[in-house]
Image 1 (cartoon, rainbow over the protein chains, first blue to last red):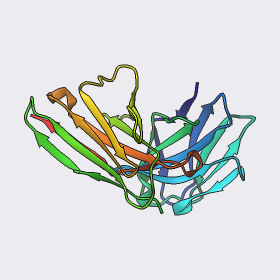
Image 2: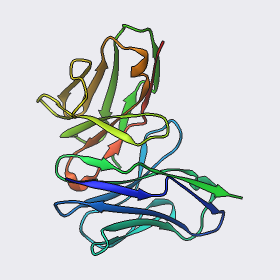
Image 3: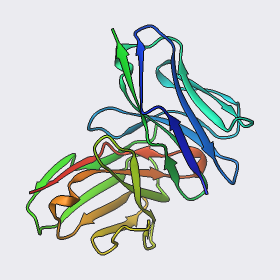
Image 4: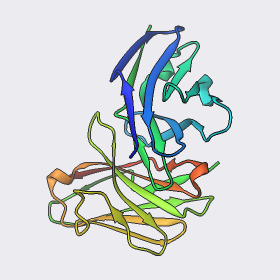
Length: 111
Length: 115
């Protein structure tokens, strides 16, 4: 069985500050891991994915995430937050059959 | 890149009527499509998984007779909410996948309001 835990339902950072969104997973098979962003009343947009290649994954909009097997983590980071980064972020894990989402983290950007 | 089109983006219907939502993969053949429901300020809840040409697999607690899923081709899946009631009002999102390594591409969602 697979599961995803996102620590913090809300995270607030100042514009220009480091963004860190935490995600821990459990999986009985080598996982594929994803981060998605959702803006209000829209679908999900893929930020980045880990599929067993490089452990440091770079995505769109300056985001990146590092897969750490020993910590079962896949935290999302961005060096400098922008106002346009305010959105809901979902971490997800997939096996061969389906994708499981975390509960999401709402990112607030303070001016 | 992979694009999934979902239509309509919003719909209002009367209680007791049926509503059909379409999900199309525009530039790839989707061997598997997924339907999710999302309540306000919550995560996505997987409703069902459909593979082209076979019956959908529904998650526990999802009424298959109420939420009819058809995946007749590699580029089209439909979700029909039958005899809709106000409690069916929600945001429905589809996603499509070709192979596991490709990841999942999501539609833009459908806001259903039953009055």
